[in-house]
Length: 324
Image (cartoon, rainbow, N blue to C red; front, side):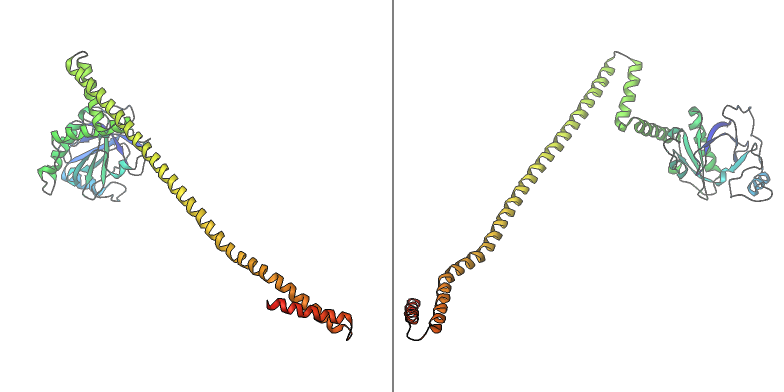
């Protein structure tokens, strides 16, 4: 398999690096090195055959005798190749579904979904890549899948392997989801729009195009009608809610007014009783005060005087009136 240009995404970094990716001649290792944005690698670069001893030495690492993580080795020089043995790869994830891709912001997601994939190592590490040229992606994925199954120490089920029909279907799904996110349309509308565009390119005035255009217009009208109906139902619900709320407020106001009137009536009854009591006690109190004045007058007047006689007669008359 000839080499190809990929973009390598590192975990925790927003930037991506352009890499030249190639298989060793014996198919044991996947190797890559950094290249410039417009650099062209000559044919045959990086395809040197590796041996078991070379593989073991690559695993030990070349950073001054210090070993790196198992399976993923970076050479001492930036211009040299880094490598990963295919026997350490457990499976392939087609699409941007690993943590490395999910941490990318919308501004940093420059690669299309259908060109992204990840090689999952047996220690749960991932090698996240995006192919520069879309045309050779399925060939690479299918070839890597065959080599991973061949070198895998564990048996894998056929249902868990990528095949060409599965890859094509997954690519279509990724394209539809990416276009749906870009345009804001649903998946069905994206597919129908793509079919309509293809039909228009093939035949401008054919019967099939007319049918598709009518279906497209009908779906747009149905969508607008459904949206209008839903908005009207929402408005009607708001109006009914306002009417019910107004009725509740009127009932609350009437209940509050009745309660206030009842409280006023209860507060008025003691006042009226007190007024009636005072009105009844008024003449009697005045007569009692007058009688006390007369007694005092009669006592102070000289015995046998006209003043005392008048006072006695007045007291007798008032006593008779009090008994009546």
